[in-house]
Image 1 (cartoon, rainbow, N blue to C red):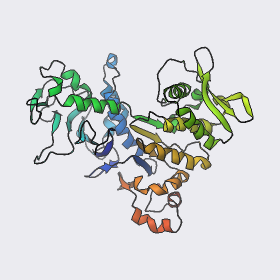
Image 2: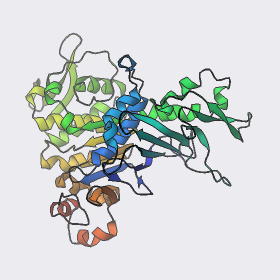
Image 3: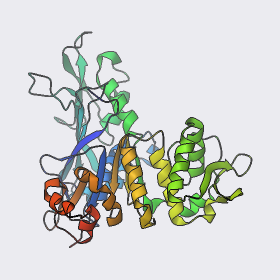
Image 4: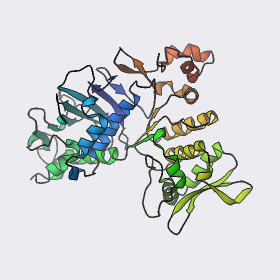
Length: 431
């Protein structure tokens, strides 16, 4: 049985910064909680996902003489993405494994090699998209395309032999740019192809990949602009359903989600009542003819609302997480870095429960340094990844092992307790 939602099953890296994923890479589930000291590579790993999304976003920067791929490479570190123990020139290699879906029942894998020149720019040196599950009797997987593998700037794509689609062959793909991601650009490259799209399997799978990856969302509590959130009065009309990185479109997103889903208003009110029990209602109201602001009503003071510029930092942050995690339109991949920042410890079990519930509907990545939050993931040990010291310059990613921790859990320890005392079986401390 396949699933309609395309997910990241695993990732493998080579020569990338300080992360060592080993020969087998790292596998992921719906809920993925990262722990580890500062500088251990948690953000570096998430930035690989962000690189893939940003490389395929249709945002033209060519008036500056660069592509979206160039910008994504720069955000990933440019030439400094290379493991500092490596000599240039060298490749930084990524492999993404995608889950099977109804559209592609054999899953998929995308290999990207970025060539770091001795001096100068980074370019796409190798890119291959193929089925991760091989057909019976085949030593090689089915390839949708291969580019830059034999000669830079050239490639091949698969074409079905006939309408029965039981066999295929490669057609050449000339003039493949090295400053773009092939996944993002191959439709344009095939525009003048004489072959119909229904005979070219990349079209269908690419559409699913692009539609999914462009919806990935990344949040960092440190990027939330509380001043902007409190004073924002966005105009009605935009169709925003996702909170921006800074959060300043919050009134608009709240308004749109309530319009799109009748149950969302009840869900968000129940969520905020969990943190402030005297809440009567939270809504996005008109602050002008076409502007919106968030109005927060409390019991016994129902005639006059409070506005976000009157609420505490922690309350505003918690409202952001509530809207993100309770949305009826959860992104297919949701990453939140240090969601505990600025929150009262008493709210940690509530936040943890919101995260767990959302992970039943989508794939979530959480990075945290909070022992208080980890206490409430004790029941999710199989979903905890520790970024541990491998050697003087590298970190490796290990899933916590329940059999190692169970004797201590039987004694009444919580996961956060073990983290607080620096238990070596949990790790996470910088010494």
